[in-house]
Image (cartoon, rainbow, N blue to C red; front, side):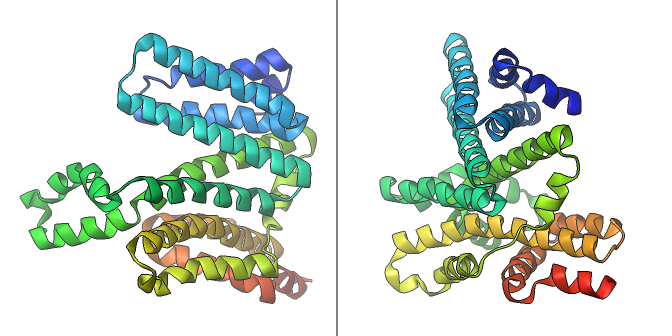
Amino acid sequence: MRSVASYILKGPLQASLSAAVPAMLSINAPFLLKLLLIYFSAIAVALVSLHLGAKKGLSVLFAAVIAALIVAEVLQVNELTRLDLWNAIYLWALAWLAAWVLYSTRSLALALETIGLVSAIPIVVFFIVVDEPIALGLQILEPMRLLLSDPDTGLAPQQVNEMLQSAVTILAGSVVAYTALGVILSLFIARSWQARLFKPGAWQQEFRSLRLSRNEGLIAAVVIIAPMFSSWLGQPLELILVNISVMVSLVYVIFGLAVLHGVIASSQSSSFWLVGIYLLLVLLSKVAAPLLMVLALSDIWVNYRARFEKKVN
């Protein structure tokens, strides 16, 4: 990947091509390939922004957007593909913004919080603009109903309805969180490539030291807990808070992972622990994610990394 990063940063033409070509190829690509191409464009935008600043990064972002829009217009793509394209443009723009924040402030925590804050905007807009968000969500999830209603699943109609009602409540937040996760991964990969080129080992140290301040932790706790007491505010505001909490939870799961990475490095434990943690996060996300959020928040006062480092020394 070092050679790829070197090519992207070789000059304006190489940087623009690195973002624009994958953007064009992603338009009619199969789903997984589309994701990889979209993320590669985001990585290119973020890498240039991290190393050369916002202005240079913005020119690369424009190259990707214009190239993708031209191809979409030439191919006369359908509405669903256009929706995917606009989501990709949103992802690239947010990757550029997060990289700009990190470049300007040298604060990875602030860059992640920027992603969380900006990601809350489409959630609020969605619930304000759409008259019947739940009905629209159920319409989007209708294919899932057909799959779950298959006799082979063994699910009763009432169980299927309950599952869909639960899913539709957090659908907007989940979609936005999914896009934000792409932005975070793109930013992290770009940062690691930059470190590999110019300061090997710096990325690992930066991620392991990622930590919430006390004020940030209190705000996060309020946002996450607020939906539990929001039923008296009425459905629209309750749904907004619930879906924003989904987005915020993702960001603070990342902070929790940073704490674990730091603890394992400080205690000089085997890296196999990390493999187990990520498997647990994938297989038992409903249990692992809240634990990671609690870990991130409690670290504000406990400082686990410093404690483990003292024990080792």
